[in-house]
Structure formats: structure tokens, C-alpha cells
Image 1 (cartoon, rainbow over the protein chains, first blue to last red):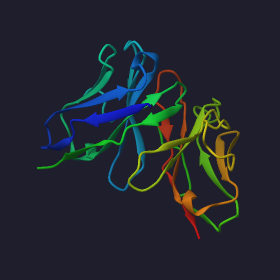
Image 2 (image 1 turned 180 degrees about the vertical axis):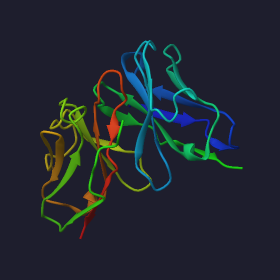
Image 3 (image 1 turned 90 degrees about the vertical axis):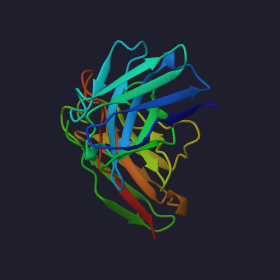
Image 4 (image 1 turned 120 degrees about the vertical axis):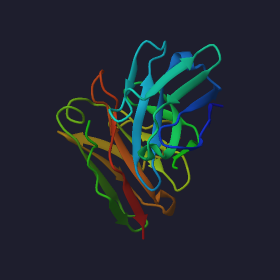
Length: 118
Length: 111
């Protein structure tokens, strides 16, 4: 059974940093693009970042480029999102998901909540 | 990238059909046959309903159907059931150098 479990969320002050982790099971992440999608409270979905199977290509939404870094450890079946210089508008539920290509996101975790507030 | 445009709400009675539109541009929806649709119930993670405009993953009922014309994609739900009440999001591939872009979401109410 495919499972994605996010961790690392929490309350952080503006300007602070957090590192989100996503542990995958039931499949090898080395065979898939992996992605982070966020959802602010009561709002819609926003694609944050994704990373190619071998980590050689990374894409970011404009609002996080230069502050967030996506990475992966295929040997440990883990995906990460390093978030620096956090802002109030980064407050959201962050989902880790598997992208089979061409934005076909077929498995999602349950999300980890990030709250940026003083 | 700009978000795709969806109506904020849609509704129908059980057994009826409803169509939700998703309008993009010639750089995303109009350029690629890589539109996907997701269903999200309150407090739950999104679920893939449709990919590549009109393909259904295993386990998704054939009551859900996708199509595209020009820069607008559509999701039609036939034979509405109460459990179809949820938020629906479209997404389109927007080129190899860009992330995909989501629509703003449509809240479907089954009256």
C-alpha cells in the first residue's frame, strides 16, 4: 500500500525556518517525480515545488523561489522541503505527493501544518 | 503562472448532472492535453479523479468525465450522489520549465 507521511510542521516566527520531511512507503520514490502542494486555511491548492526522479531538476512557485529548497534521498525514500525566511503568507497545510508525470498526482499524504506567526 | 479560473460554486440534485469549467490560456490548458481534476472532501487530502483531460484512474466511477475545448477544460459529474459533495480542483501542465497551475476550486453542493 502506498503511503506518504509528512512531518516537521509547527509554529514558527516570521523570518524563521522549518524543514518538512515526507516518508514514503509502498513504492520507491526513485521512480517518480515528487511534489509539495500547500493549502492555506480555507483556501485552494497551490503547487509549491517539485523534484525530478534523480533530483537533477527542481521547480518552484515564484513566491517561494530563493527561500524554499526541495530535496530527496532516494536511498531512504524521503523527500524534504527546507523553508527559510518564512512569512505569514506561508501558513498552510503542506502536502507531499507523488507525481507520475504531466501533473498526474496520484497519491497524497495527509499534510503537515505550518503556522507562521509571532 | 496565473491560477486557472473555476466557478466558485456549482450545485445539482441527486441523479442530475453538473459540469464544472476550468479556463486557462494558450500556455497551459490550450497547449497541452495534461489537465487533471481532483476531489477534496472537508478535512481530507485531494484525490485524483481525472488525468490527461479524460482518463480515469482505477477505482474512479465512470460518472466522472473530463473534456477540453480550446483553453477550457470541463469536468462533468453524471448521476449526482450525495457523496459527490466536495471541492473540485483542476490543474494543468504549463510547460517543462514551470510548475503546474491549479484552479481556484469549485464547491459542489448536492441539494
